Length: 293
Ligand code: MN
Image 1 (tube, protein in one colour):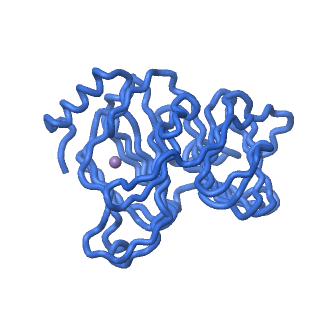
Image 2: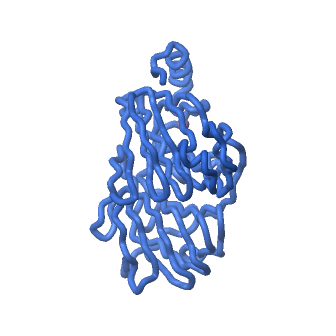
């Protein structure tokens, strides 16, 4: 992962969660964006919700969020602890557990539910996950929905030099290892574990937006001040080197992607380019055009 004389992607800002709320009755989330007004700095990513870690008592009927629509983007759920069951109106269903990822391309529209997996809910336990929303370019917002269950076993693992840690490639390519996620625009998404007092240097494309979310631990990025649990480093687009130094055993989500330079219009679960398209989305949902479970 050495990059020689590569220009560093300087840290432009370090953010704490801008809001905290429940999604349904199963996902106690802290939001990093859009609550921090970072649309341009994190594009193509639209939303980062960090759920938990929180203990849930055993319960007969799984908690979560019932039937609701999406249009115009992708939802990506990354599990750390617990299990989620997904079901959508395009006929796709799947269960993900620790280390697994669900990559759901809503595109022209689906209705889905996201619940704690039944057996896990009945046993209770600690829940911890991240949900990202990844934008689609204008030309793809009305394409057909798609769904990918990405299991831990199918995610390539890169051992860092000298036992510094381990990187799992969910999407994109690093050190010749290609992540299994099919993305619409170029996205690099890594789950990085870095041991205390060790360093990792990642090489990411010049011009990509890049941010580092701290799931656990305490780190510095490109010589910045230290930041810890639930904080987000946002880097400048220019440059290609991201050096991370861990002060304690740390787990990080690395998000990097080619920016989508188009207007963003949001209304709840719909993200389009213009207000008229949001009105159309609401009308189409209410008319049942996104289907039902
Ligand atoms: Mn959803």
